[in-house]
Length: 275
Ligand code: SF4
Image: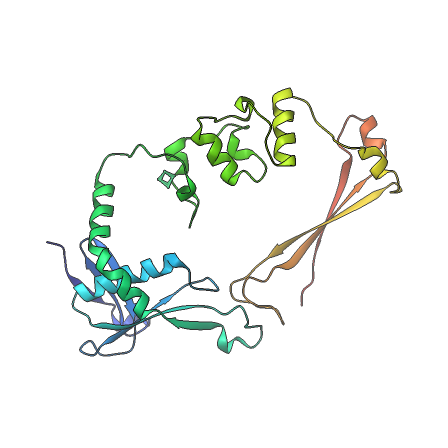
């Protein structure tokens, strides 16, 4: 028999007056609303994304389930998320809400079985798990190093845009780029394979001729961006990429190669004044 508990936070904490936590069968649910406890409750789950994702529905279904089992009548469920159409300084519509009551009702009958299975898994021995898409989606699993240990410098997951390619190779028992025994489809990944296997730097095409029209010194401009959930600069919306620092690298023809060093030498970082 699981524990049933509704905990109301003390008023002096100055948070939402009806912020509650409930624990049922070892799973915690939480709820925020302004209704007295004897009326039906509205559960609002706040997410930092700009849309509702499938995993949010399972998450909020668990919370609705726990709260119902703990004695609250949850009759209405919403997911609140950031509004990508909202721009600073008009933040009055920073969040939008989507009603998901029906979706949650469809998920709930399956939950007791899922919860039981998950709790059994947590109590059990370390599973003999294989690396797969589930290790990175919908979130990057924090246990990757525990399950698979640190990866070597030329592990197949270090291949350019490895994704499914690395998973296919691992499925076939190929862990290292040096053990790949056939050409790869992607041009860059294939060049990487040949470079690792030969131990040589590979430059393809006539790079010298392509660089000939550029007079020395050559400047390369790069910039770094930030994407804030809550915008703070005029015209910016949630997570919009905003340049905040520019880096200029200069390469002087021949000079550094003669010194046996890579061609790009001088770097100057410039903070961008956004105000
Ligand atoms: S890394 Fe995470 S998702 Fe992948 S097998 Fe291990 S525990 Fe499972």
